Image (cartoon, rainbow, N blue to C red; front, side):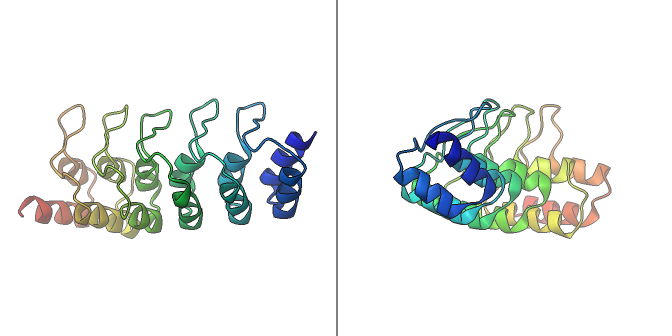
Length: 197
C-alpha cells in the first residue's frame, strides 16, 4: 500500500506525500506496471521538489523502465535544467543510453533544448557519442532540427564543446552536407568556420 502511494505521490508532484510514504516504509525503488520508479515518474513530469526528496533519500538516477528510460535520460527529453541539477549530485551514469542508443545529450539536441545542452556540456558527457541510428547530437540537431535560432545555438555550443564536425552518419554524410542540403545557411556557416580551424 505504501509503495503505491509513493508512486502516486511522485507522479502527482506531492512532495509531502512522498516524504510521508518514505517515512512510513515505502520502498524507494518500487516500480509501477511499466517498471517506472518514483524518481522516474517525478522526472517525467518535472516535479523537482519531489525529485530532491527522493535523491536525498538515495533514489537511483539510473533505474531503467521497460523501454530503457531512466530519470537521468528523461532530462534530455524534457530539457529540464532544474531536474538535471537535482540529479547530478546522485552521480548518474552519463554513458547510459536510451532505447535508441543515445545519451541524454542527443534527444536534447534533437528537440532544441538550448539551456539543457549548454548545461550538460559542462559535465563529462561524450559530445561525440553515436547512437544506434549512426547520429551524434550534432547530426541530430541538423538532420532533425529546422535550422532556426535554437538549433543554431546548439550547433555553436556543440562546436565550442569540442564536437567533431567531420564525423559523418552511416551514409558518410557530414553535418555540413546535411545543413547545405536542408538550406540551413547559418548552421552551414558555423560548421564551415569550425572546419577551417
